[in-house]
Length: 115
Ligand SMILES: [Zn+2]
Image 1 (cartoon, helix red, strand yellow):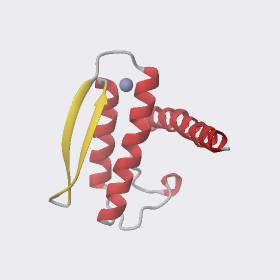
Image 2 (cartoon, helix red, strand yellow):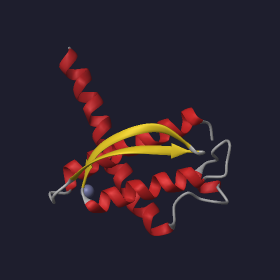
Image 3 (tube, helix red, strand yellow):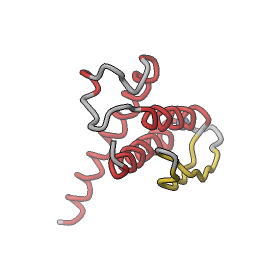
Image 4 (cartoon, protein in one colour):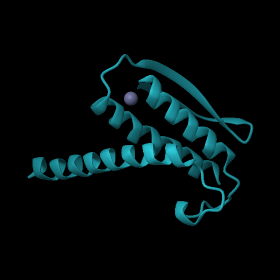
């Protein structure tokens, strides 16, 4: 995939996982500052505060994205080399659902607070 696409994938992913972790996990979080390389170059810099589990999920996802062989990322369901193995995919689906709903709600709240 293109650099730009990779960057936005990582940033979106982090936003979702961070939101989920803030909501669901009370355990101690680690502040991490990380350079994310892609195709041999450091492409972006991310900062996050995640618990160990979520950090592992995030790092795992980054790794899978880095290894994705597709130039144009196909739809996950139809992909022959899916990014995520089954158990991780389920975990991730849970995160996406939770944070997606929450982000949706935040948007709606914003809409209302403007008026
Ligand atoms: Zn967490």
